[in-house]
Image (cartoon, rainbow, N blue to C red):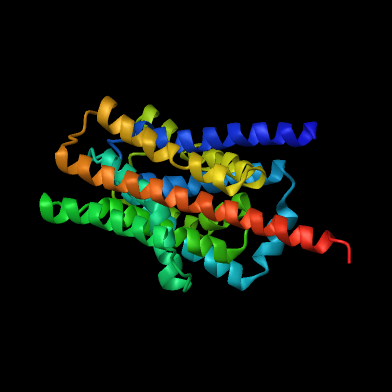
Length: 310
């Protein structure tokens, strides 16, 4: 019992660390604003591969890696999910460095709602009334910016769509967090290395020209992989509802960073849109809690019927 409590405590801390790191990471990308987003992305794949190679060796997990590598289906899904997350990573880095942090946070606030929509459209899952209401509220939020203020939040929509697609593909791959990220990185690393070589041949490579950006680019592997390790630990030992609440930390931190640290414009139009998204998330969360309580009640009832004397 004490061991279980200890694991829960470390899992909560790991979850907090993962989501807060993801939420505050715009500050890290801001330090690399002089480096093109495409070069940052390429380095992210290369150095993530290097870091995870060391981590998997330290964890003695190469048997697991080899086992997964024998499945063409798993490798195909990992390649596809790697492509999806590369779109997400690029958009996020690029948006941060053109002062659109608030819009990236909007995208990640919308992600749970987009996941529900994907489940309904792609997996034929039936939406409950509250889920449908939350999706409609989010849609009204996007339409408010589009028609009321002439600005379609395409960065937010692309970020949440690419992350939603990534989640679907990653789920289909059936790989654990660290090995899965390793496959995503190593399958796309040759493309990244080729691109960096092309930049070098054209004398456009920032890496190696100055100490500060070079060190920061090398550490992109750590910044990418370590929160994933923390998240993997949290996901194994926490209930999905707890994990669901924690995930809102990331866009909340980014939102506060954009408004109060980098002083990005946040007017009435954005306030209305965010309010609709936040209301949608409240409805979404209430529905999830009601459904969880109903599932538990059914499980208890089923167990009492099975245990009842005949």
